[in-house]
Length: 185
Image (cartoon, rainbow, N blue to C red; front, top):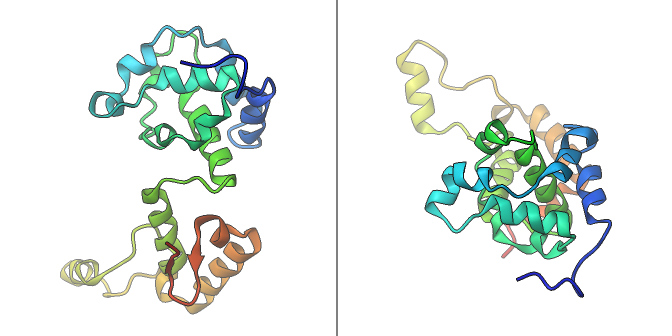
């Protein structure tokens, strides 16, 4: 139950909209103000069938200004399949709103472990899915060189990625330890 007297921020919706600018754009994230809580998004959600994730609840909390939604695991349960968006009778860009909420949560240091691990791979290998021995074997079997022409195998590219990461302080955001090349516990 949402306590209307405490824990709400009347400008929270504006923060969510601003977090969607410039990509995908404020007009897209502002669409969530048209939500009338029909529940089509929740009924359509494949993640909601297997978890306690309720899209409608997240959107309602966002509309009500309940910033605690940023501390919830719920915003990380969305698999960004866009089914909710495709079926929404009000054309609310639900997935984009969820991504804006994730951006705000990440700015606070709240991020799902799986997302941090993906970021870790990018920091260590320049790619979310690093090449490994199986990749090399597969490439060789089809007549390609074992090493793909990707950042993982280019010192120059890796240095550029790491410079960007440090400049944006993304390493601090996810808790990356440069000495151990792992996430801080």
